[in-house]
Length: 221
Length: 188
Ligand SMILES: [Zn+2]
Ligand SMILES: [Zn+2]
Image 1 (cartoon, rainbow over the protein chains, first blue to last red):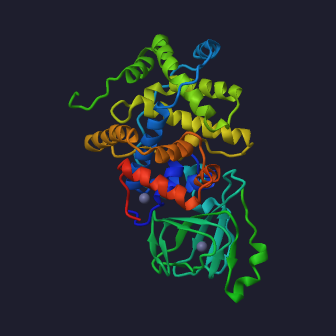
Image 2: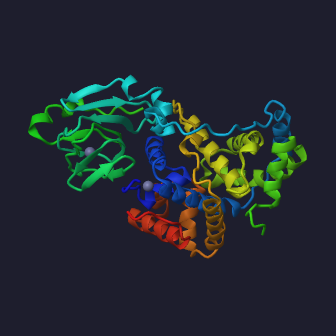
């Protein structure tokens, strides 16, 4: 059961359909682990539905109805099969929205080595404003101290990590605003995989890694 | 109300008829009710042209026809189900107009709802009804801001700009409104 959740502000923007694509995917992936936020999102959607029902109707010409009726033959109502049994493999536990972007399991991705304990794999969401990447941190490994020139959303997919503010496990969602410095360290027990959504590149603050900053360009899209 | 909690309003019946017999008369009734709301939704915030608004009406109503069998009257009101399709189609249309090259469609962002037990289903239906009632009682400044966020599709930051209010004020108004709707929240 996740302990760290998106704020009500984020969930409202998510439910209204207003979050940028990449951030929305990260929130959706959290819901996969969190029944509580799922319920909240459904209720927030009901709020949208109530506002929708109260809109002043705008007349629609009969020609629109006619052209829809004409297209109904091409599109017979679909029937729906029962959802398949829950899949307990690694791929099955990965949120559906990530599975769509990954087309395979974690080992089939291209991982770029950043430091001895950190590898990054960039996924393509099509959102030009945000980088959407998986971080693989070796058990006990540390991500060098860094701050964010923009916002950072993180979702733990496997294992866990800790920083000065707490320790995070599978399904936990963390949002950090710009200029928050931290140094996440993976838990000792197992490797950690998390999803990070950024709108500006990381900036390493430790002198040992500062030389890398010019190479850390945002890989959005 | 039947103890199963089954909804028997007119629009759910129309959807059931479509799923069962491809009933065009029922579809036409649904269209006459929902199409003008979908058009109003498309035009709120004047983000889409009238031509795009009509296109959106067509897309949404075709989806309603195709997906009628997936509608479960025990879980949600028909109007919520149609609204969700409209919201997703509008988001997809925006992304198409902005030429996003993405493998994801807006409906991929709504995870399959779990919690099928009757108690959870009944609770979620009740909270839907309660939210609709409470919405009418919101003070106008809070109702206005929710309309901007949900109907006009404005981010909190955009809403702040348009209403000439600080971002913090917009956020707290939205939060206050959501609180008054008694939306259940996990502690932050
Ligand atoms: Zn949650
Ligand atoms: Zn960070």
